[in-house]
Image (cartoon, one colour):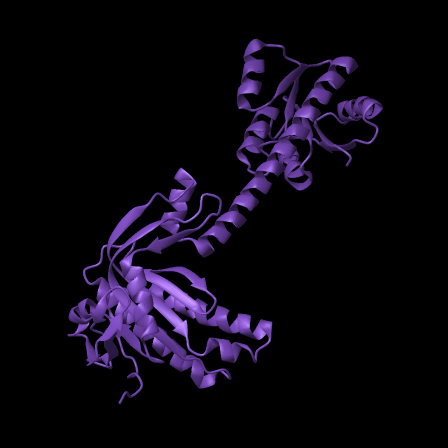
Length: 372
């Protein structure tokens, strides 16, 4: 690509002379011209030259003023500028360099010296452009990487990975783990095209993400049709159980609303269990993290023991939300590793016309479906 050189001088004769001298050594160079500092600033923004030869003494706006403006402009601040002047005063040279010029030439200008300075400046210009392109590409790559990482990792975990390179094991106390399972997923998905199946899962899980995000919950991962989240992991909540139950109820409502218009009707089963969890990287080679512990295992088993379109909770969670939701007692069931475990279903809010949002305000909502 041909280099662009902007020559700024109030003498058309000097512009023509300098242009001719440069063209002898750089025949492919595109020579631009301006008669004063104001015009030079406009030309620089319009054409983005690789180099500017700037005369000092000019009417309307002199060279020092023009250099000052160019260096303040984000579009032109990196363009190398050589100052031309009939004065060889050390103070003038210092002022020109302090203002932002990279070099200083005295008039009358000798051809050999001019081209040596021009070639050096052009090399610098090329280096600056390459570095800027690399920086922009790096910024773009980092932005894409961050976008991808934020879609699979919670923000606090992402910050830990950036700082430490991994997620150190940590115990989080007083959380509620949520497991959501799509009922009869295998049989239903067998009759769908891959594209339809993917859209169904994306639409459903995206809606789940919105709901749990409003109630201080974090999606941990999805495994096929299974959705796992944890509430309170990164927030100190007065009643984490209530937030988790409210989120679960809204997930159920979202499925019911979707089924009103969607050709494919889904049902879900939700299990909730509260307690401590451990979070850590699960591999030294893959960028991932997971949660572990009895709370996770029990949430999964409560979901397994749940009927379609029900929310199965533990006794501890029941005690925390009994004044907010109608609770249905279930027959205690045997759970592997825990023996006989009491279980309860969440029916609907005690005040079905009110729900609590993340800001603590109330809004009207429809009652849930009838349960016998």
